[in-house]
Every structure is written in C-alpha cells, then in structure tokens.
Image (cartoon, rainbow, N blue to C red; front, side, top):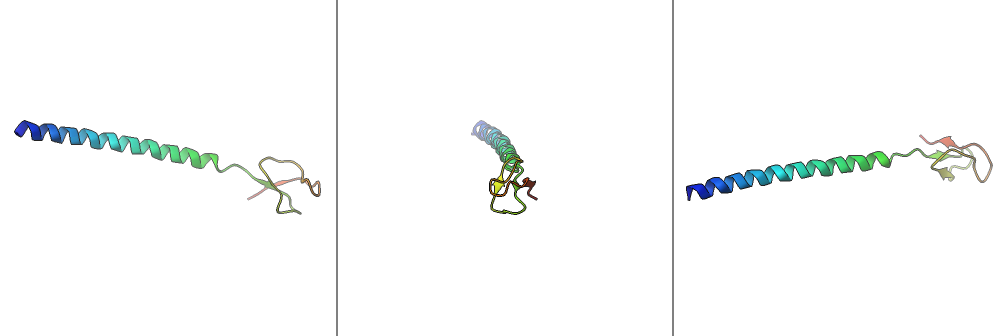
Length: 69
C-alpha cells in the first residue's frame, strides 16, 4: 500500500508538470496570433469609408491614402 501511494504521488506530479507546459505553448500561440492582427490600415483623408491594407490611391477621389492611427 505504501508503494502504491508513492507511485500515485509521482504520477500525479508528472501529470501536473505536463499540463503546465502545454498551457504555456497555448499562451505563446495566442500571442503570435495577436501580432499578426495588428497590420497597418490606410484610409483616404476625404473618404473615411475607404480602408486598404496597403498604401495607394483612393478609388473615389484619387487622393493618396494615409496610414490610419
């Protein structure tokens, strides 16, 4: 019985360490996702409804798009 308790304690400790390390990896994956969603956006000074992922010209008034803050 004594050995059973020792083995059970050891198994529980190993399982707790394994679960802790996998949750760390999930946290890193979430952080990487947040970095990719902060892409720059560009908008027209005259037509605020025009939003683009890259610099260029407004399709409505042909003004240069500016970085959205």
